Image (cartoon, rainbow over all chains, first blue to last red; front, side):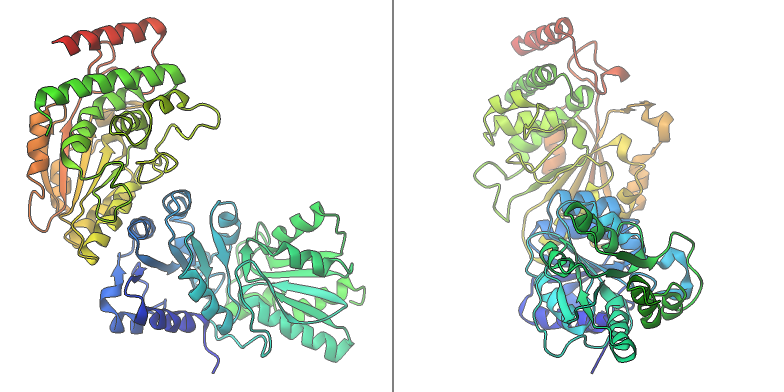
Length: 312
Length: 274
């Protein structure tokens, strides 16, 4: 049954903790929003509460990791990556203390709670930090794989999760590795490259394009924002078809600009569009209402695709 | 165990080395390195169970230098203990050198890449907490400057250290009372520091940070209270050991001229003969 990626994150951590007594979850009064209450009940000695103090959360997590603990530091993405940014840069990444940073309720998952609780900056900010793998899993499959891989990393990683129930993207593609995007739908007319919880509306847009317009759109789940899968980008760009990127993030500095930078510097001149949250105070609403407002919906993505194909 | 006289001789040599490498590099944090060097001397030579052969052991004591800018003091002590050849320090701050102006793990013996102030009490708390969780006996020492204490995450860490009863953690404040702008009491006073930390659940002792016997006695008494983290407030003199540098603000990161360097060596040389 489809669940929120956060539920899968929590369930996977419990599975790992059954055999890894060194695994430690560190939270900042966030075990409830991180769906970690069951973890805490099953493994009370493997969860450390820091209190509402995100800078301390990351610094303490770095210290625990430096002493060999397998640390997942879990906090709302908005606070984890803004308030603790320097601790991420210095205590975790620069000193290479391999903390698994987990930003929960990322993007606009908190919806109408407003911009204090949105993280539309995290990909941009963290992409510029050396020695950090950045991953936004799209569905339950990618989530479980990402958590399992993160637990084995000897360098820092940032996992970004929303909290919406996410349908499975593909029944057949069961490959997952950090730094390798997943083609979850084949197509020849254009490519939609999305990440995190925007992959599903991109996939739905591709289905509409084929059903209603006979247009076949390739869909890529670019779960790893850093390192970006340049080989896959070059492959999808090689046919010259339009490319649309979609992300639950500012249009500045995230997936789209990462792709654009690679394509421009490597001679690709495909028609190209970045879809994300524009540079403004975000409209009030639920996550899906905000998505719809800014066109990050299946109809919005379909509309942009048609424009790039001169069929809008 | 080194005698007090031997420790004093080491400190004099360390001070000469600090000045030599700062003079050679044309950069460095002179005043603070001279204020904290006696503390590092006592820690590394009489307290910490860590050396070049045990540095990778999970049971080693950890020394984390929160006031990373006085790295010259750390480097000369690590060199003396044999972590790396002292001649390496001739490359201090040179192009492509591992010997950066703040502690870096590229240098064998350095625990963390410090330098950003106010971070490392948190990291030390995490390291001490790991020892408790894993039932290991190592202790964690962190050296802080009095000027970095207004950083807020210090106080987040201070709260958590007592919450988790981390009596394997010892923070030392090198209270030399000066920071780059002026007297710490004028910039942003943290006094009464002892009462603040005691209110946060720590056990606190004052010590003369240049008195080897007093430092040793304080460290021998750790933890100051069972179930509490310990704070040593080490009263020190910025620029200690060189008459014209002592308590002078400009020596925060002042680099001596050739004549000043020679004069300083002369003063320290005479002291070594005493």
